[in-house]
Length: 125
Image (cartoon, rainbow, N blue to C red):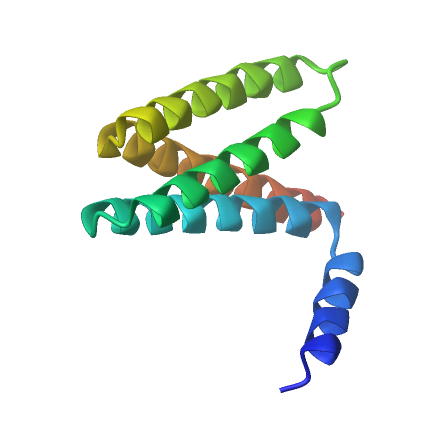
């Protein structure tokens, strides 16, 4: 398999995505990493668990850094991302599933809300 060609394809597909598609992709990746962390924890694969949680934290930090703070919703999302970060830290340090699962569920709900908002905005155009 030509890995260089695949990497170029991935980069090109990401470069042509809309902001809404990129946001949904980030949330999909966040939920995927949290599911991966849950499974790794169940199997006691702690290095994979910690790496998956850390990647989730990095995604949340990135989402937080992209907020335009002049809007009230951005302040609310910022506080929510701060909570997610805190909970994932708790999950990672204590190797606990409950905070991890809570963030995964809330991130999935948030992803669906953004998907609906993007769909509604597209229909209005």
